[in-house]
Length: 240
Ligand SMILES: NC(=O)c1ccc[n+]([C@@H]2O[C@H](COP(=O)([O-])OP(=O)(O)OC[C@H]3O[C@@H](n4cnc5c(N)ncnc54)[C@H](OP(=O)(O)O)[C@@H]3O)[C@@H](O)[C@H]2O)c1
Image (cartoon, rainbow, N blue to C red; front, side):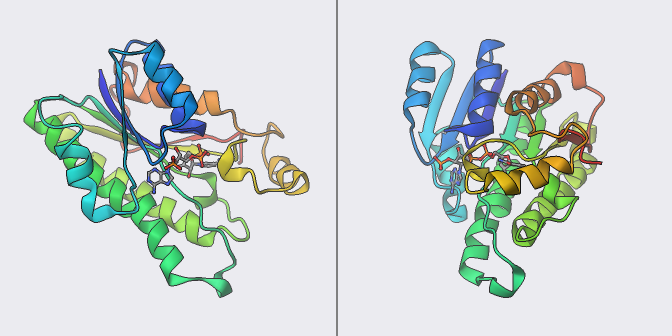
């Protein structure tokens, strides 16, 4: 399968790349930084791993940067994973419009545009593709300071459900993976005390496994999930 994935440089995106490459798929990966870890991946999977540095906060350039100069229609896409995101966290009374706009461009507008061109690519190549968005448990369970970030994830969840309705008859599926808090760069600013408080709210009393989230994405991309669309799959240590 040919799969486009954003936010590949570290964390969940990197783990998804590793799982899919080991399964033999070809990966077109995007993030701003070309990390040492990515260079290692590129060396190990010379024929099946391709990287391009793209800043997704420039939504106007997305078509050109990704679909004209990287994944054009000669590459038949089977899957698109919208994983890249930034977290602008603050209390609502401190809301800064510029920061909010940058986050929405990165977390919502560019992913919507990427979905548009990924679907066009799938239609052009007569592919029944699978689209996966990575959301966050914060869109379902409130956390102080995460209102702006959580609302960007809520937008993407609605977008996915409607994508599933709109394109299902062409065989295109769209699903969301909803992770709980994971130990990645995104959550690195949290203190141990804050993390403990978050983990106490889960059934398993621990962080969500990055590898488990990556395996869930791989499953939803595969034909094993052929009848699953329009769903939010929670992978959150049981935040119920
Ligand atoms: N960590 C958590 O606790 C948690 C919980 C629930 C959901 N999530 C979600 O899980 C997904 C992965 O997050 P993570 O924890 O792996 O975070 P992370 O370690 O901070 O990784 C974020 C990825 O997104 C990329 N990215 C950010 N801004 C970008 C931009 N403007 N243009 C292109 N790429 C950009 C980063 O690459 P560059 O910086 O190199 O561009 C990086 O590869 C995100 O959607 C996040 O919202 C995370």
